[in-house]
Structures are given as structure tokens and as C-alpha cells.
Amino acid sequence: DEKGLRWRVGCCEAVSFPPRYRVAAVDTMNCCDSSQPSSQRTSRAISHAHQEPDMYQQHKPNGRSTAFPSPRVIGAALALGVASAPAVACDAAYTTTGPAYCFLSEVGGCANLPAFLAAHQPIFPVTLVIDQQCPAISQTLVLPGRMTLAGVGRDGEGALLFQNLGLNVPAIAVAPGQGNIEIRDLLIRYISAVPRGIGLRLNGNHMISMNGVRIDRFNVGVEGTDSYSIVINQSNISDNRTNLYLGHQANSWRVRDSILGRALGWSVIVRGPNNDVLFDGNRLESNQLGGFQLFTLGTVLSNNRLEFNGQAGAWHGVDVRPTAQETRILSNIFSTDNINDTGADTRCAFNINVAEPASCL
Image (cartoon, rainbow, N blue to C red; front, top):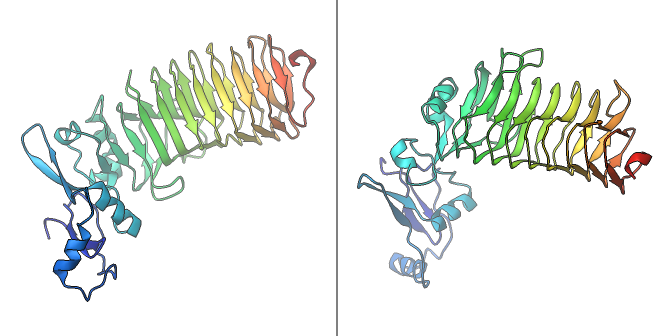
């Protein structure tokens, strides 16, 4: 009914969800002895000490209140596979009271996505779930601060597919001066024949995290300038002309446990000037010109795997340029690749299957 679907959870306990919660119908479960009178079953279900209520009231600044299922009820529903994350109307009045989930399919779909984001600048503290495949985006999507942009699996239903971008036009950017953004479980791809555009551009944006994201077929996968404390984790940024480009003051970046492969040029360019950049536990494979090209201060490469990089050049897994200072290359495993070091105060140690240059011992 209009108050939401009724279903059973726990010990045959009837619960009513408001419409903003997506709930599938559930048959009566044999979760308690149906031979007992209903009054006894209900009593037993709520007899535990300190049992939290089924519903909470959320009070809004305008004096209204909205009922929400408690974490206990939501947890039981998720465990049974009958409820998904709450879908709410993404109105400004609601989002000022706390985090919310929005679903692209419920806010106008792919055609409305650029306008929807533009209408919620500069800060929009919600999780926007891309639950559709958007096949032909031809403009930059600008994310507001404090947003989480989530897909439904890296190669699942949710995907942002771009076309007809200029060579260095970003597919996704962040509003000027904004940060505290997460992008997760999402496919971001350029679908025109020739790699163009920048998958994600960060310029003056701090505290951005990417988890389980795939970005491919752009001119540059991720580009960062004047952006601090960026985390890329368990992602796949591959098949771009350059997978990662770190420019001026791209400081305190952490790239971990990710795949950075098959670039048409260098996979990773740390151009700087910047400092305090860590690449740990990544796999770089089959990048045409090489794996890492380093120009700056204090880059640390540790526990990475480098294989078949530089086949169009000199098989450089790591190329430390003359402007680079105090680079650390530690405990990496190499296949066919080598280390080229013309930097200052480079240190190499515990690397496997590579002749470490005398300059960095």
C-alpha cells in the first residue's frame, strides 16, 4: 500500500517500510513455532532486554518527521536478501539532516545526470548510485563536494560511458576547491575510437578516494594537480594513453593494490614538482613506453610487479629522470623490465629479478 510493503522478519514479526525503502515481498517464514498463539510469539520476539525499536523518527528542520526502519530491521532484511539500500528523494531539505542514498534511475536517469549534478553544487553530502548504463555522455560531469559516486560493480549495470570529448577535456571533474569525495565500484570509459579526454581530473581538490573503480580508453586516466591526500585502491586504470599523470603539487597520493596496465605511452608519470607519493602492491604490465617515469622528490615504489613494460622503448620498468631526488625503489618484482636511474640520491633494495644500477645501491 502507499505506506510501504508489509513483510515478515525475525520471529514472524510484521514490519512496514516507508516507500523510500526498496523492499521485495517475502513469504511467511518458518522462523518460529506457528503452533504457538500469536500473542505468545510476539511477546517472545520482543522480550529481550534493551531491544531497539523497529522504527526511528527522523526530525527535519521544518518540523516534519519521517519514520525509518531501525538498523536491526534493515540488517535482518539485507541478510535475507529482501531489501536494498534506502532510496530517497534527493531534496535539499532532507540532505541537510544527514546522509542519503539517491538512485540515478529515480532522479531523471542518464539524460538528466549533468543537470542534476549542476543543480546540487557546491556541496551535496549523499551517495548517488549509478544504477543504469549511461551510453553517450559528451560533456564533463562536475561532482559537488562530500559526495559519494557509486556504481553497482565495476563491470555491472552501472557505467558512465563518454564520447566526443576534446583531447584534454575531463569526463569527470570536481567542483573548484571541493573534496571529501569517494568514487567506488564504477566503470568510467571513453567509447570513441581514438583515446581522448581525461577520465578524472583533480585540480585543487583534496581528500578524494577511489575504490574498485575502472577507468579506461582515455588520453589520460587520472590527472592530478594541486591536490593532496588522494587514495586509489583496488582499482583498474588501464588502456589509456597515460594511466596516471601527477603534476604540480600532487602531494601525498597513495596508489595501492591496483592494475595500471596496457598504456599506449608511460603508465605512470610523476611530473611534479611534488613529493610524498607512494605506489605499493600494484601490477604494471604491457605498457608500451614503460612503467613509472619519475621527475620529482621522494617517490616510493614498493612491492609492485613490473612485467613487459617498455617494449616500444628500452624496457624501462622504472625511469628515474635527472630532476628526481631521493626516490626509493624497494621490494618490487621485475620480469623483463629494468631500472634506469639518472636521478639524485636514489636508493634501491630487495628488488627481485632485476640488476639494480650501481647509482641506486
